[in-house]
Image 1 (tube, helix red, strand yellow):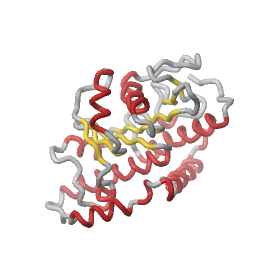
Image 2: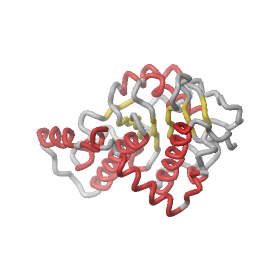
Image 3: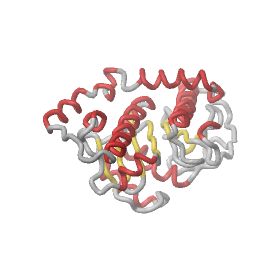
Length: 249
């Protein structure tokens, strides 16, 4: 399944960064057997992007075995790596339709999927969810994401909001960089975890709308002028390097 090493240093950098991201997901327990995906758009006019080879666990993803595909899900480098159709349909729709969606992440974590199934959706009454005020979109469940005709409806649901709750399904984020998309997803995941845990304790303390607004405005981790999540992502990459640096191969 290994692809030819990328000659373009920009592509090589993205390959290593994306492979590290898959290992971070594994370290955090955000895996789903061999399913789900993180994709990143490659530089250049071809509009190609990288995706994990279908059949590998996230702990087996490396910089060299990431698969380069086009927006139709076709492998373009002749490596023969397999791609999950449900992966490229969802991701290519967002890469194609949102100019700043250079990275797209999708998970089926227990807490995220539980909130996605909740009629009320995400409560904006905890530390993390309040930071996402105005940044969360919802898309209704239409079944397994293998049908291209869902794409326009998905894009209408998302608009410009980078944190997406796929109803009855899971979580999704997108961003201009891998760290930025990760910062959004990590915050959304933490918000869901706290909401699910807090539900066992009964009614929660509401956060006034003015405080929510202030929290959302003060959430500078999503702003590229303040790093766009790079520092937190780099810290997790260092942890992964201490555990198993083979993702760099």
